[in-house]
Image 1 (cartoon, rainbow, N blue to C red):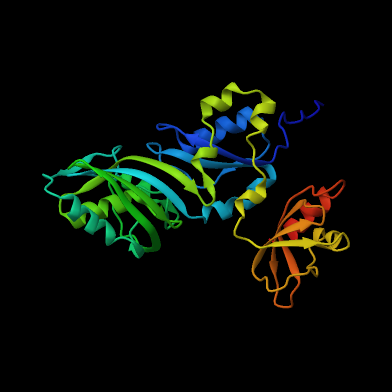
Image 2: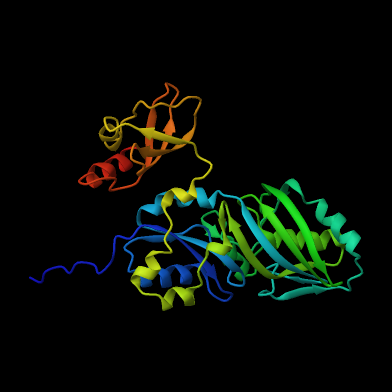
Length: 318
């Protein structure tokens, strides 16, 4: 009987900010980084289209437990919108479906953009990963099938026109989760009466993470293991908006068993970041109606020998 070989991987944990180049899919960026780190567990926090560049946060190990918070975070983009040409994908990768002359002034463009600021209902593009009746929309689109999509409520916090040469507009956008910049470009073209599509897109920020902190795949490849590890950020960096709660040494063992514990909360409510008295990040919890804190996403191991208990606690509260 042959002995089962142990996986050749590292229990590395942390958040890596990648500056994704154009032409690379989000999954390709993830798999390359996972290979370089020899990571046992990894995931990304929402994909970027292949034509898009910019900030792509990747999570390794225990940091995957906070990935949802980055999925739900606000986003910051720089987009080039080409007026006068419509494509089936709403971007430059698609097939041109209509062309019209452009007779739009900068003032008209700014007025049209202003109409998208605030809470709006946006219809996702057919070429998207949204599932309908268990099938991704882009699978249907590739078969030439178009289905009705329900509008989604999103928020465009800020839309700033940076430059306009009469055909291409450079626009900076801050928006909520679930926003499709391709749909915004398409809808802008419809409002202006000339059609439009995204010709280039760069993501500048995700929540509090900024592109200035990101590393390119090429630069990451050139580093040794220690150099790569220095680019990993602590998991709690993804949770700046959650209140911090410190737990006593007596409370931590009960927390690791999945039990709600008492804590000095003051007026804190909802989801919270949990720390030991010595500053160690324990994970994420939720304040209950009775004032106790219940574990929701625990980081393991939190201290020597606590990994197994923490893992059980994580499973018990999902």
